[in-house]
Amino acid sequence: MKSLIIGANGQLGRDLLRASGDQEVIQFGGRAELDVTSVLAVNQAMQELKPDVVFNTAARCDVDACESDVLSAFDVNANGVLNVARACESNRVRLVHISTDYVFSGSKGSPYFEDDPADPINVYGTSKLAGERFALSYCSNALVIRTSGLYGAAGSREKGGNFVETMVRLSGERSELRGVNDQTLSPTYTRDLAEICLSLADSDAVGIQHVVNSGHCTWAEWAREIFQLLGRDVRLEEVSLEEFGPIAPRPRFTALESKNSRKPLPNWRDALRRYLVEKQYLDS
Ligand SMILES: NC(=O)c1ccc[n+]([C@@H]2O[C@H](COP(=O)([O-])OP(=O)(O)OC[C@H]3O[C@@H](n4cnc5c(N)ncnc54)[C@H](OP(=O)(O)O)[C@@H]3O)[C@@H](O)[C@H]2O)c1
Image (cartoon, rainbow, N blue to C red):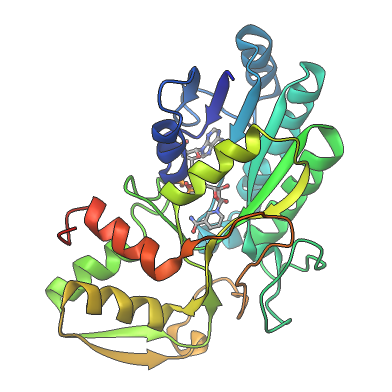
């Protein structure tokens, strides 16, 4: 299988590369190498390279930045996906496109399944939902993988790190921190996600599939688990999302579960421990 990874400099992109081992892979690190917003560049790349499968991880995923830069969010997260989906269709290429738990409002109050109606409440989620619809409407061999709370060794390219890295750093600098206790998600290790992306790419699955480390927690519980594993003595003040004051509205409960997956991924606590070992914050 000849793969093309778009967004290979990102945290998921890097782990897709690593998980591909000695398979044939072409990578475009970021917009400097292949800008998904350029129809011309995307068509040219697809025609010249003729991959069997495209992994599209490219996105604007800073939720607050998307809220104030709507055009750019839609340009990459929606129009960019349309360009990739059309190019895949005309070259008979399989598309594995990555989406998000933020396509949901969180009002369900329990884990979301693939067939729950999407109802985003911020620009990021709305632009990603538009991207999903473009992928599925314009490419007949497309699989949309929704995931949540990503962290991986490379760190998020756009956010310049990830939540675990921020907690590791801050817990070494301060004795008191704040954690949001009324927003729940399914933290997911990109190393685990990448392996499933590859095996799903090699299957005949189409449509939408949720892929996350199993279980869920609030940001405060996630932070506590990090401090406990690292043996850091930090007092965590639990605050509400409203007190924390993000720019963009956030969905309160976006844990994901799957009706389609055959085997659940390891629990988020197990994944977190393995990440801390990979980053050498913990001995194995
Ligand atoms: N991070 C999360 O917590 C989270 C949660 C749920 C779902 N997701 C989804 O998972 C996917 C991967 O996220 P991630 O955390 O790995 O993101 P990331 O680390 O920020 O990587 C995104 C990649 O996209 C590239 N990119 C941005 N704009 C581009 C453009 N116009 N053309 C081509 N490439 C472009 C970036 O490279 P340059 O900056 O060099 O252009 C980077 O390599 C995204 O689709 C995201 O929406 C993320």
